[in-house]
Image 1 (tube, one colour):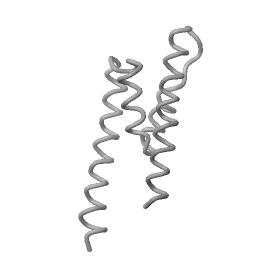
Image 2 (cartoon, rainbow, N blue to C red):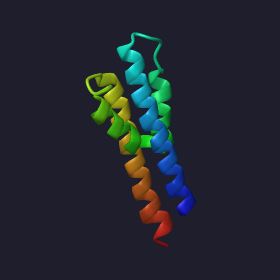
Image 3 (cartoon, rainbow, N blue to C red):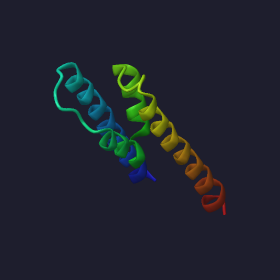
Length: 91
């Protein structure tokens, strides 16, 4: 369990940094990090880091297509967590 929590902490930190860096690139009108790359980190468990970074840096908060994909991933993660906890770990 410790390893899993450590993994989530690392991937969330990387997600946070990635969103902040992309915001910096956007301000400088430079080549940006793709949405696919940003959402890959969310998918891999960086949901908390990405969500916090979106709020703190005010980045990707008005792009509806990105937000739709972000919240879809969050919903799938919540459903997966519910399933694992209730059907696999409770027995």
